[in-house]
Length: 400
Ligand code: ADP
Image (tube, rainbow, N blue to C red; front, side):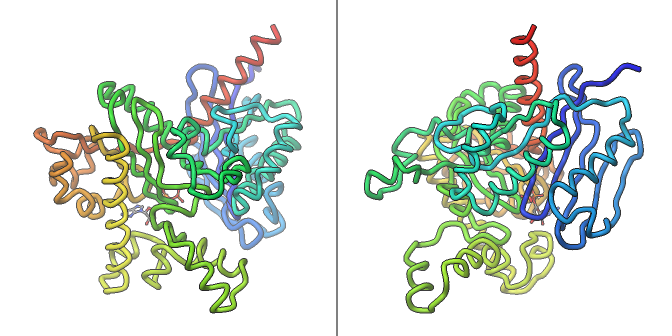
């Protein structure tokens, strides 16, 4: 029996493990995708196994996914049953923080893992889970190459002025910088633009990644120039439950005047704010759009206002605008939000075609719009799979 070379990609969150399986015998082709959610609680497994078993969705006994190692074991049982002739020669991991040095994906070795652990304080909500995913995969596939792909990497060429905070100089050297995140998504969109619209790719593009996490990035000639996210994935736009930009003075007030602990403040900023906090109803844009009550509308108003404001700032950083690209769950699906963002932006060269927008077309600007407006579904998994394949063949070439 021949074995099929495959890449497994893993994206480990605080209580979830997303996975994809790619055939890498040629350009990576997705064979399966899914996730285990609610790890440590009442876990659920959801998977789409392509042609083999189609869709799987079931609750798991809690002991089967009490942690990421258990969740990965469950995923592997499923994948082995569905793809008996597949052999994972490489596992690609989404890792939120690569620190100031890593502008490219990297093979995970012991020293690299130690470095990623040292970066955990920079992303305490995400990095430990990403590391748990790597450790679980190393235990399950001792012979496979492990590759880390960083959400910060795409932004590592920011000009220094876009990389600093105006804090005492030594803080920059200690790593307190505007890292930017969602880099795998921006890399995918930039690559797609190069393929389908090379002239736009060569120009000034703002990408709005609007999902549960949300950020925007100014890209010049395929390189990130500025991002709305900064030191952590908390800054910039309001998100599902994260506040986005706030005056740091609010933290002092909550601690000194309200007597809150720093952990309480962190919890408010990360999990009780954003769309959920402002509306008091939900972090889910679909729910807010359907709610029709003032609190939900106010949350949407603020979301749209911040996006329009950041668009102006990023266009200024780029010296103009050739395209605005929407992606992420909200950007790809919500016609109403796209319309509210784009209406009245002719002054910056953006003219929305409402029919194209309503039909979720790829280009949703009019033929006369000076700058193009596009919707491109993002695909972070394939960026990881391509990197995994690339580093695996480099390793094989070096060994032969
Ligand atoms: P994540 O950052 O977790 O990957 P997604 O990119 O999947 O998140 O985006 C989730 C968000 O997209 C949710 O707020 C959800 O309500 C929103 N969304 C998905 N489909 C629609 C839709 N048809 N209309 C409005 N919002 C949508």
